[in-house]
Image (cartoon, rainbow, N blue to C red; front, side, top):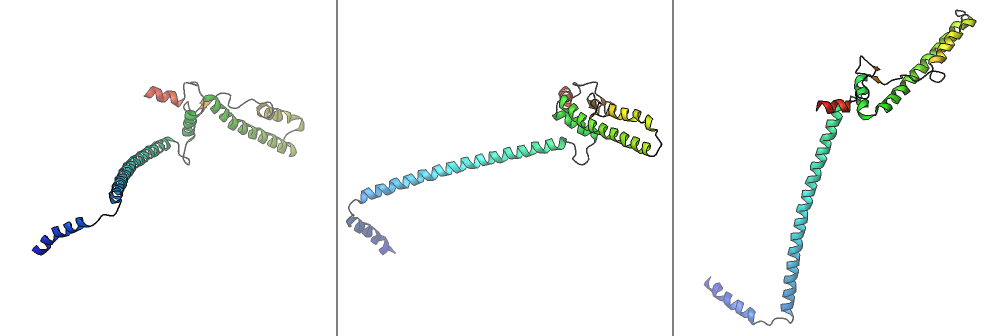
Length: 188
């Protein structure tokens, strides 16, 4: 074992005595510079990876917060399958102006009144055909049907905004103060 130890310095000395190829110190310097450049690139990539990981984690947190908000909003909405008319009215008041809600109520109300007027006309014709209603007396029923029918001479139904908060869908005496936005602001 001592032979190998004493021979090691001799081997190193022998290597030092070997001739170095021309340009070798330059090559070594180039390799050292390239190595330094690679170390800086690795450090830069590691730093970029850490920054990307932080941005990804932030994006995940923001997504989770958005999903939580959506769940909270959906929890406050009336059930699509079990909503009561009062719940639907309350929700529509939150998202629509009173004028828009009145127009929506009128579209439904006008159609319902048109159907009722048509039924009056059909029943009048049936009674007249069976001799129950005298031909010269059917004018009263026809006039009444035309008078309420919005497609004929009738007005808009409802004429005022209806509200589920006042004894079950009666005209809203509190409009526009009856909107949920204002009630919610007063409660907070």
